[in-house]
Length: 191
Length: 191
DNA sequence: GACTACCTACCTTCTGGTAGGTAGTATCGG
DNA sequence: CCGATACTACCTACCAGAAGGTAGGTAGTC
Image 1 (cartoon, each protein chain N blue to C red):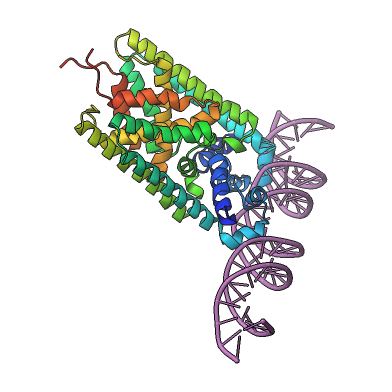
Image 2 (image 1 turned 45 degrees about the vertical axis):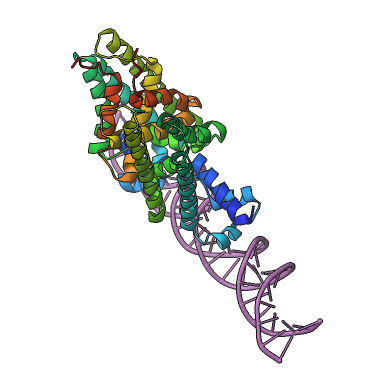
C-alpha cells in the first residue's frame, strides 16, 4: 500500500477513535512513519485530508450496501446484513462509524466534510427506506408507520449504540439492539 | 448567578456544541467576560471543570427522572415525558445531550469525566428498565424482549438521533423516532 | 529538465497552566 | 474602634508544548 493510502487509512482510524478535533498531523506522521511536513505533500490541508477520508468511507459503505442489495436473499436477511456492517466495525475493528464521530464534531468541521457526513446519512436512510418498502411488498416485513421514519429510527439506534458502546465498554450493545430493530418490522409469526 | 455557576453553564453549552476537545479556556473566558487565568481560580484544571460539568448535568437529569417517576400518570405518559426531556434539549435549547458528546470524545477524556458519562448511561438504562417492567405489570406496556435490552435500544435511538439531527439539520428527528419507540412497547389496541 | 516523495527548519497561533500581584472584604485580638 | 491578618476574586505577564502550515532543499525517477 502506498503512503497516500496509508495516510487515508490511518487518518480514518484516528478519527473513528478520537474524532476530528482529536487527531493531528503529528500523530498521523508518527503512526505512518513519515515526517509531519510530508503529509502536506499528499494532503495540503487538514480539510483536504478530512474530506478525502469521508469521501472514501462513504464510497466504501455504499459499495457494501450495493452488494447487499444485489444479493439473493430475503429482506430480513438483507436487513440483518446491513446491521452486520455496523457490528463488524464495532466488534471486530473496535471502531465507531466514522460519520457519527464526525457528526459529533459538527461545529468544528469544514463545510466539505460536513456535506459528506450529511450525504452519508441521507444515502443510508434512502437505502433503508427502499429496503423496507420492498421487503413489505415481498411480504417479509410488516409495519404500519412510514418507512422513512422507521429508517431514521433504525439508523439512529445503530449509530447511537456504537457511541454508547464505546463509553460503557459494552461491545455487545449492537447485539442487544438488533432483535428490537428486527421485531419492529418482521412479520409476526402466527402462533 | 455567580461567576462559578456562569462558568459551569457556559462550559456545559460549549461541550454540548463542540465536544470536549472543541472547547477551550480562552473561549470560555471570552464568553463569560473574565480573563483566562481567572478560570483557574474556580477550576484549577480542565479536568476539574469537565468533571464538575458532568456531575452537575447528571444530577440535574436524575432529578428530572425522579420527578417523572413520582408523577401521577400512566406509564405511557411517563415514557413520553422521558422522551420529552431529550426533545426539549434538542428542539428548544438547540443542544445535544452532554453525555453523548462526551462519549464521542471518549478517548481524550480524563478518567473522572469518563466515569460520570458511564454512570449517566447506566442510570438512564436502569431507570428505563424499571419503567418498562412496572409499566408492563400495570398493563400499560406489552413486550416480549428483555426489558434491559429495550432500555438499551431506546437510549441508543434517542442519543443517536440527537447527534444525527445536528448534522442533518433535522430538528424534527426525535419526533420521527418517538412513535417507533412507543409502538414497540405500547399495548396493541384490539381493533 | 521536470516531477515525485520525501526531508529539515521554521512560523504563527492556540493550548492548558503558572507566578505573582492587587483591590476589596471579612475576621480577629487589643 | 483600630489595625493586623487572611481570604476571595480577579488581574497582567508569562511559559512550554502542540496545533496546522510554509519555505526551501535533496535524492531518485521518468
